[in-house]
Length: 185
Image 1 (cartoon, helix red, strand yellow):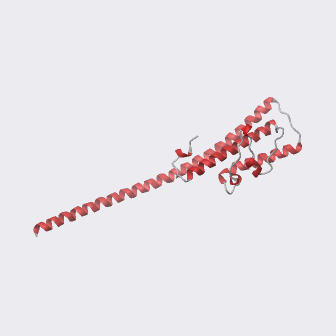
Image 2 (cartoon, helix red, strand yellow; image 1 turned 135 degrees about the horizontal axis):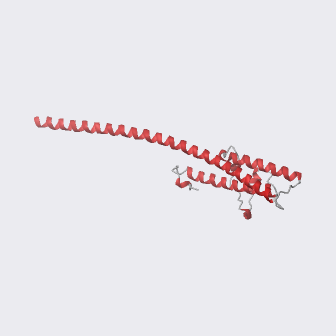
Image 3 (spheres, one colour; image 1 turned 180 degrees about the vertical axis):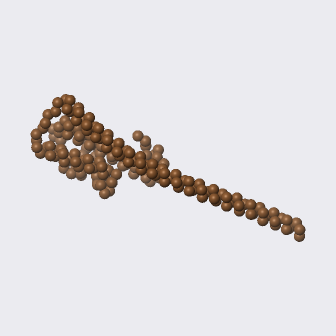
């Protein structure tokens, strides 16, 4: 993955982009762990987060799950770039809560477990592909806008050069005229 400093973005945008990417990675990791619980069953002693605040503060170093920094990270209005991920979180938490309430745990054969895991991974990859495609399209649009602005600037620069050349010629002509006029006197 490219570091945000590789992108030609204004300096004030780079730290925000880096934080967004890090937060999204933490959210995706939490989703992976919860999906694994959905497939394999809830581990003993695990409490399903009851709210997005609980989800945000949940950390489990043994599973490489880290706490999310800002409460705005889980808020769709504050962080619209996380909206799709947070919808997945809400759906998965609801599904896990319903499963925990029924207390009936279905046992899956090893083949069924592998198929469910692959289906879950395929869904994750499809969502990631969609998100990346959206980002690529947004960056492409930004590049097109920048290219148009560059072309307009280059055209304006060419016109300014022509004006400067014309003014230089006028100054030279005036200078020659003055020299000729002074010689006649």
